[in-house]
Amino acid sequence: MCRKSISFISPDDALSDDYFKEPPEEATEKAQTRRTGKQQSKHDSNIEDNGAVEHTERTESSEVTQPLESLEDMLDRVEVGRYHKHQRTTVMILIFFVLLFGLGFYVYAHYQHEILSFLGTTNQKTVMGDETIKPPLQPEDQSVTIQSEPPGAQIWLNGTDTNLRTPSVLHQLKLKTVYQVKVVREGFQEREQKFILFEKREEPISFTMVPQETPAYTLTVVSNPGGAEILVNGIPSGFQTPHVITSLEVGKKYLITVSKDGYLTNEQEIVNNDQGDKSIDITLSALPKASLVISSQPEGATIYLGGEKTAFETPHTVDALDIPQKILITLKKQGYEDAIEAVVLTAAKEYPVGLTLNKIPVIPTEKITTPHNTSQTETTSSSTTTSKTKDSFSAFNTTNSNLAQLGKLRIDSRPAGASVSINGTPKGITPMVVGDLPKNTALSVTVLKKGYSAWSRTVRLSQDRLEINAILAP
Image 1 (spheres, rainbow, N blue to C red):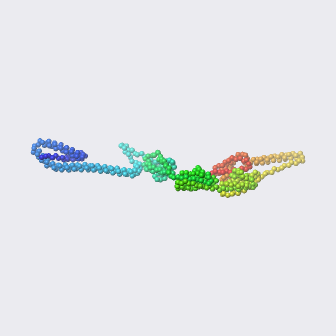
Image 2 (cartoon, one colour):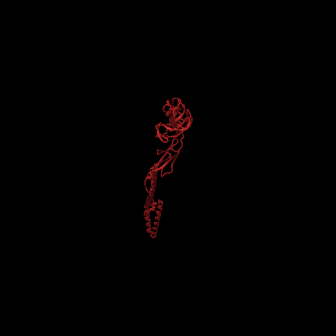
Image 3 (cartoon, rainbow, N blue to C red):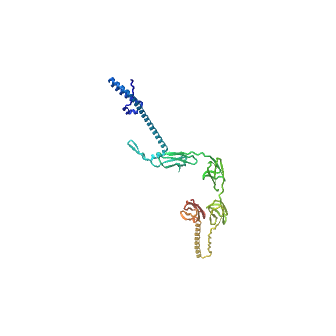
């Protein structure tokens, strides 16, 4: 009878750790090797038995063979099932970690700023080995400098106007926070940039502004009369009419102003919505003027205006006087006292001025006669009287000579009401006349009024009367 070899798993093999860790084929081979060794040892021990015992053993082995084959198949199936279960568990663990990593990446990508901000404000401790390290304390507020080329650009932070212009420093910024800064300047393209402050930043954020490519046109400015100053939006251009202004932006409003001395200023607003060149012609009107019709009694008096001598004598009409203004008129004539009058010019009309000059009084001299037929006593007495009379005339002539060396000074000011001092001595309030001043002597005249600059001049009286007009500057 042919013995059919069978393999089965012993309880010791089933409980072995190697069995469950190794693939089923290798585990089965090792189990069969162990069983074969045990069976060989048992067979060698039974050779010494008699034939009957051997026959009985073969009979029993044949009877047990069929059930052991079924048990072996069952154990193989259990072993293969456990291996497959182990593989499924490993795959599920890998899938779990892949999903967990994907979820973490999604959260970090969408909430990066919040996570960084949270980590920057916590006081967590980092443990390395046996040492505990605290993160360094960061200041709450940081600053960064924003600059641009060219400067003067308006600074916006996170969509809000800061009311600052480059170069400027932005304060009260937080660490690990995303900021968006934008610079805006007329005539240039807007520039913006995002930044995060992870630490104190010393280097400024710089922008290079790029000019906008806008269409432009030229404007020819002509005036009548020519030679007028040109202003563009109130800013002097440095040019006079006629002149061609270039590089004006299409669609932008401009105010062109022309001005010329002696004429009323005129202006014109212009907007060009296409790229065609344009021209404007501005007419200037002469300023309204006032006139003074000056007469005197007697005629032939020299006319002084504002203390300045003119080439005219009365009667005369002075034209083209600016308004409004206050003007001081003085008439002078030999042998007459000066006549003075102040006139305020407020309108473009004729202002009549008539003045009367008074003669300077002349002091008459007394004639003295001496009798011819007198006695010696009378002669002596007469001589004495004549001597006294001569002394009296000598004193009178000296007095007249001293009076001839004195003069008067009339002082006026614009505005009036200023205090006057001569050689440091207060004299009064303008307008006023100061008399008994020595001629041909330097006189220091100072005029003061609160709210105005001091006016000071040094004058000499070369004639009987002198007039000065002090114009005070605010």
